[in-house]
Image (cartoon, rainbow, N blue to C red):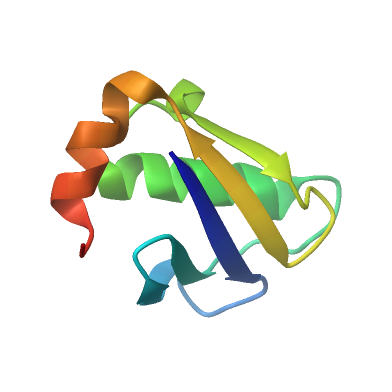
Length: 86
């Protein structure tokens, strides 16, 4: 499963702001976008929010950009689909 994220770093809290559509969401993270801190915090936050291991989430595009593409491992896709709107 591939998801597109609009990430807002330096936010007050880590939060999923909204699902734009079934494969796109807006997320805020507290960490600053330097030395990969925001990316690490993003993966940690989504892992906790969706109750899947961090290793199941990979940033495939946009390592240094605010718009990112994430790939979710196949074995956790069903679990994730239960948690987000269709």
